[in-house]
Every structure is written in C-alpha cells, then in structure tokens.
Length: 155
Image 1 (cartoon, rainbow, N blue to C red):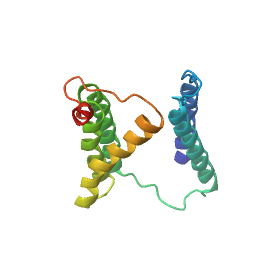
Image 2: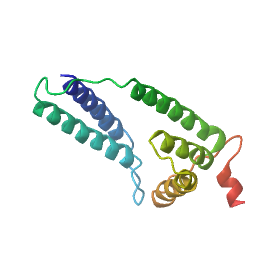
Image 3: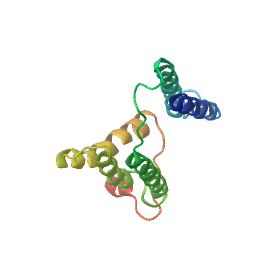
C-alpha cells in the first residue's frame, strides 16, 4: 500500500512539474527552449512514478517486512538544505564557486569516498555544467554580487 501511495504522490508531483514546464515561454527562433530541462526531468519523474506503481502492483502482501531507515530521511533533509543554500549562493558568488564546493559534498553523501574523485568533481562538475548550460544551451550564467569566479577567470 505504501508503494502505491508513494507512486501516486510522485505521479502527482511530476504532473504538476510537467504543467510548470509548459508555462515557460516559447523560445525565439534559433534559440533553445528554456523549459527543455525541467520538462525532460518532469517526464522522467513521471516515468519513474509509473514504474513505482507497476512495481507495487506486482508485490504480494506480506512477503518482506517493511523497514524504515531514519538515516535516509536525515539525508533527504540535508540534501534539501544544501540545495537551498546552493541556490541562494548563486546570487552572492555566481555559479562556479558554489558548484565547486557543493559537488564534492553531495558526492560524499552519496557514498563517493575517493579523494581523487571528490577533488575531480570540484573541477569537472562546474566545467561540464558550464559547457552544457552556458555554452551549448546559450543560457546566461548568473554572476555573483559579492564575488564571481567566472568574471575573475575571464579577466
């Protein structure tokens, strides 16, 4: 029953996200639609919710006991707080510096323990995301009010 409810809640959230993505204005000729990433993410979320509901319908009652993981709830709350701080830090420090700091922290939370991997994520994540969003998609990068590493790098 719990898996059904989780699937239905996820489906509802993803339908709201699809509706929200459709509210993004159309792109001018030659530009990329700004809603393409949120739309793709919400459709993927809808697909995952359908898989969750289908998986719940195939389960038979009473096979496995339901276990609760209180550590997982703490990690979700911690990721939410990190996401809020990360989003707000764009205004103060631009895009590159917050991404370079947050990427290793989040990778560590997801189980990456290699110091080489964590250090490389601090460089590769901002670089890859910069190329995807600001070079290929043509989105303007957010510049920081206090300090902006991108403007410092560009001179």
